[in-house]
Image (tube, rainbow, N blue to C red; front, side, top):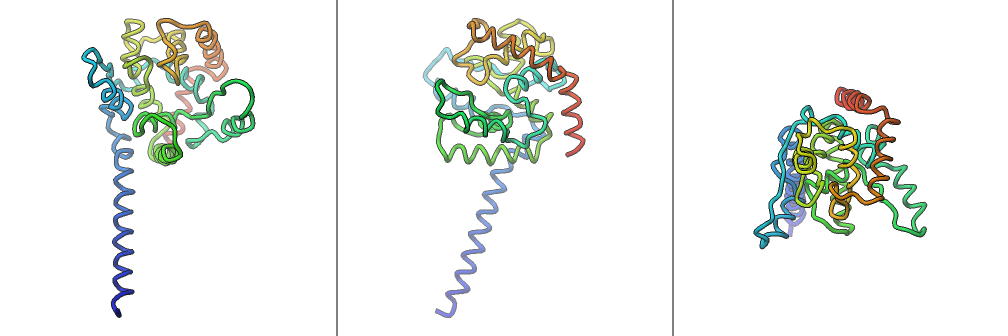
Length: 243
């Protein structure tokens, strides 16, 4: 009995060591992907699993550095999805407050997910809705924002986000829908790609609905108001230097 307190202390330290190891292991992929280009993502793997019996299923994914992506695409994505991208730290609190204030009004509201949150989901999580999933998403969102530059976040996002059924990233989308490389995307084409986010299974780049055409025009206006690609490049460079 005299050794009981000592055994408890050993058990506590052992538990703390295991928890610390688990925490480090959870951060390891975030650390690695800050420097290594992801060969795939959780969403791509899930899509392959869902279609494992479909012999016609082919996923299109080809990594390209951000320097080889037209600057029109990152700014179009920011204009469409996350206009406070350069100032928030993973969560757009203003947008979240607006969503909460308007909850319950008629019509289906657009969510307040940032590009960082969507990237965390695409890279590390499964599709679905639960508090557990939201908690893990928040954890990885914070980790990405702390360990990556804003430029790296955009670079990975435009490479892994789905623009059509089985079509992931800027290069695959540019080739599939326009027959060009990602480097040659025009402002109009970039806005067309951004218009399907975040629901590429409902909307199609190659068969835009009236809503998408209006949204594309809106995205183009927002890009001009934000200052265009030059503004975004300057923003990301300054954020990178401040890290």
